[in-house]
Image (cartoon, rainbow, N blue to C red; front, side, top):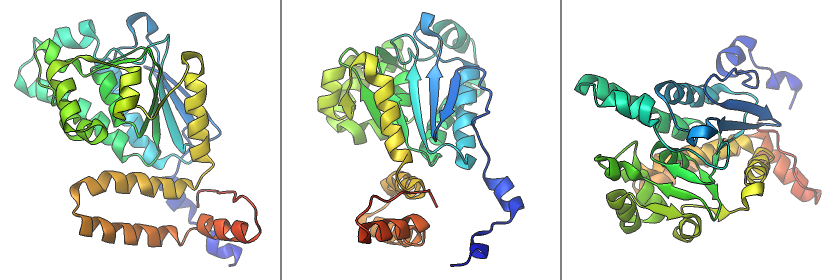
Length: 286
């Protein structure tokens, strides 16, 4: 295959691919290294609660990741030994009780958009969960593709405990798919905390880590994903999400089409030639 066949119109690239390492986050910490982006919720004195502004910035950032050329996996972690305590009581909960329905719906749709953007971005997202993981924090962990926890982590979908329904930000759709309908019902009806060891048994956590090693383990997992066929990983994430609404027959056909596209990638060819040469393939995401 000649090199000219690999050339792409620069205007097309400019409109569809852009680096994100230089993104200047305002409401959390942002770092990109070797294809792994780390988002650190950084209000440790309050157990890293979200505000109207941080909700919006997270929503917009995950949306922008669709076009990131230098981010192939994302780690979300909290500072100071806790993940996220949910919406800030003083900066969100207090103002909400003063609002009318149109403004309340504006807020709930904004929070739901964060979940939509997390599910829609092509990069696998790994939540590194230690300590308190409550309310919207639990939702962000739930919405990630994988979750690493610690024995001391406490995950609570506590909406019921503040007089709200458990059906918040997609919880009634996503949580049962992770832990089962009965267990999800228990968490959403009672708002009780799910401990780390119990969360691993239930399948909410992929595995538990030592607190001091949690971030490094999450970043190592992310790096392993980055070293894999990142284009194909994006297709896998897309199909995992889209097939929730498909019949088995529709899913099989959709996967046939998706896999045929992946067979056109150079990573697929690289894997074959590496196998023939008895070598480990070096994937480049194209």
